[in-house]
Length: 209
Image (cartoon, one colour):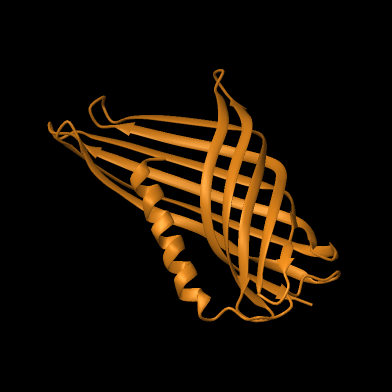
């Protein structure tokens, strides 16, 4: 992850905090046994730069849906679904083009423990998910007779996260999560991928009782 997309995400986080601070409610957070929680979070970034005079542009995103039930007060258990994708295209000076696309999916069990600050509408949380990950990549090069190389791998992966959530009503909250994803995936032709990804996710969650 380059420094510029990271700085853009930090700036977005600061704007989100400023914009939502006005609407934060001073209320008891509804994190009680028997309730349900679910929602979406993610991030998006665009790349545009030059390498030795060749133009490179691209797009990448990550989306996560975490859903579960409160088995006891403040502790939710459920499922985590993730999908991330990135594309890069290099327009070479001789007119050729290099294209690369990578996809990573994850599905597994998820658990989160909330640490609420009663009377503020805020809560911190650590979370963890364990499950199955699948990776696919595609590389095209117009210089070598439009050659296409495709690879795939899968295996066990895990996620460790730390975040903060702010309730704007009894049922709706905005949240930010810093997440580390690790694991080892294997594929054909001795392909081995060791995951060590860090994401900052922004999202909205719905709480029902």
